[in-house]
Amino acid sequence: MPELPEVETTRRGIEPHVIGRTIAALEVYERRLRWPVARELPALLAGRRIISAGRRAKYLLIGLEGGTLIVHLGMSGSLRVLDASVPRLRHDQYDLRLDSGRVVRFNDPRRFGSLHYTEADPAQHRLLRDLAPEPFDAAFNPEYLWRISRGRRLAIKQLLMNSRLVVGVGNIYASEALFRARIRPGRQARRLRRAETARLVSAVRTVLSQAIRVGGTTLRDYVGADGSPGYFRQKLYVYERVDQPCRVCGTPIRHRVQQARSSYYCPVCQR
DNA sequence: ATGGGCACCTGGCTGC
DNA sequence: TGCAGCCAGGTGCCCA
Image (cartoon, protein in one colour):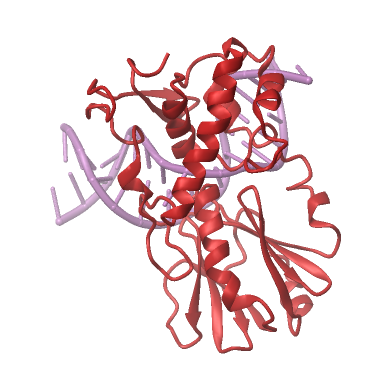
């Protein structure tokens, strides 16, 4: 998916177009996403004003008067702001039509994305309530990572990608953060030393914020709200660079499969 | 409690 | 050219 930087880029992209706007209609063309889009949603949303565009982990939170839309982009989803006259394409599943004449259009070839709506506190929604602290919050700190990694036999990369423990980091940024922290992806979490947990917290924050700065990483499907790709791919140190020279020491980058996901690392820089 | 494996779905690429 | 097989940015759920 879109990982945190891509979701944040999307949030920033739609924000100026949606704040203060009223929803003219929600038009659902394909209800079958990861969970079926609720049939009653269009009737619930019509006429509501949008007051905020937020994010929690990889979820976009579109705040309305009296409720919140919870949007997930899955692996291949994107949200774009378009003129309502732009013809729909394959895999466009819904349009949030605004009173400005524009639409926020959701497209997701794999349909792993989702759309939920709640009138309660979104933080208490079942998809959000057990999420770990945001990476840029003070609560995500070396002490926190130290504490949650104690006694854990799973690989540190798996820990980074478990949203109950760390949020926002997916397969690309897990490999990239571990490279920057000089830790091999397969190391057991409980084997990390204090200094390493500190380096890793800082590496997660750095890599996410650098990626946000250039609009995220586009491998295939991802585009921002204006349709443009993210440029962080050019800054990747290890992801999808198997056999290419490490940008730090020149050693060929290695690839291994962990829990059916590709991991990339430098065998010299990372220990 | 923890951790691993599967499922959901489509498309693009590789190799026979 | 056709097609089988594999891989892809996520994550909830089930099982041991």
